[in-house]
Length: 327
Image 1 (cartoon, helix red, strand yellow):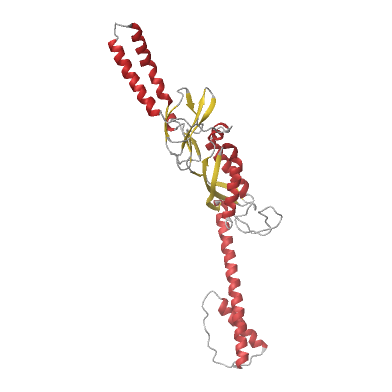
Image 2 (cartoon, one colour; image 1 turned 45 degrees about the horizontal axis):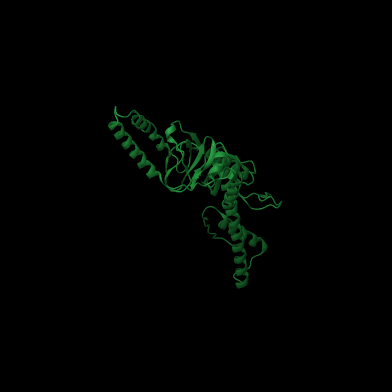
């Protein structure tokens, strides 16, 4: 389906005034022709009964709005320029997603990802060409290591081709939401939540350091490309995709927190031990260089042990004064 842009004259106001003039003339003609001219009376009555048919052909478009028109089931074109138009009164506007409410900017109901409005007057046949932001519901997905995580994304999109959006898919809003869910699952299962060894996230057969937490920009770009590839036939352009929520699932969140704490403690202890060994080595070198005291191997070992206990301990050392002989 190829989009056809209609370039009609913005003469809606002219036809609206014309309908009022016809009604006024028909009313006056009916009053003066009463019981004088049956033909004129018939013409006036006919005009009074049919002039209202002009009104369904009056269409008002605001900036960044479009109207897809069909005539007896055939697509005749799309109005995109703002203005007051008059079209064939038998033309009907088509928008299959008029009653669909997404959790996004521009829609009224924010209770769910996709919800169908019950009130028919809640929707409009006009298609918005504005940039919209879809805030899809959080999903629970297993990463490449099998850990369940919760992730949510915000997708910025707009309608690029109104004909494809209306006629190529059943409901372009629902279609976009479902494709966002599918693309998100396909990309997330490639990455671990955090950096893990021997994991290839790029598909080149070489392990890398890609992760959902550390490579959020790369992950978001891949999600955006995946969604764009899927919604191309629906006439939708995906401008951006961003991760709005990322966390371990509640059932493993506590365990993963303990794991992170243990890893942090190990790293901190390793740094403390490395620093303590360097300080002990420096102390022994200074004692030997300045010849302050001469220590045998046994006393050096005792000194090293005491210094390491003092430097690596969790609590402050309690000094003990030795009043006796060193030996």
